[in-house]
Length: 275
Image (cartoon, rainbow, N blue to C red; front, side, top):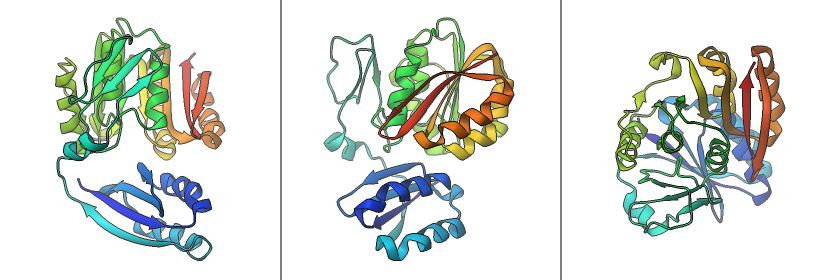
């Protein structure tokens, strides 16, 4: 499935609110530019009516001008080789591409050759999820990575000693890239294709990872709880700090208890534990 790319020129003070509004309707990646933002969404997730409603609401005040393109499925590694820098998550893990040299001083290393900028460790949500993974005992555990993208969180679970790791994504391009990255990091598992309802993973899992977006998390959280073992951990990210309360309100009736929360660049992450 192809991605749609929207180049949105707007006044600087409207960038964050536009990103927040577009994230609510399924846009999953953003890049700030000198003139505004570039926003990306899978074609299958795009709701033209909702998008037009948001843009129209800010058109005059934000002085919006936009262009729309379909992004062809090409290999983006050449562009990444020019611009992609390694990521350091404390001294826990060093995330690099295959064209970077290894670095000493880290407990773990992950090699990611991304096709696009989704799930490389650069985004605040991925960074926080990796950090929170490092705070949990994965040894001998079954781990489920929902919306796996490049597979980086599944790879981290494997490195931390998980007995079994399952992962899937709704984008066939991500599945191909994720499997490539699994091979680079010694995982024998293969990434599944589809939504959680289509893949239908079989629990229980001691750790579930879901770095998606608020609407999907709210819709699927009951499914996550059903797959989680007693005292198991659910790690969530992909939403803004102002959305933390909504996620906790949704989680509490299902027996999930907040253990830890964090934020980075206004993006939030939660560690929840099942009663």
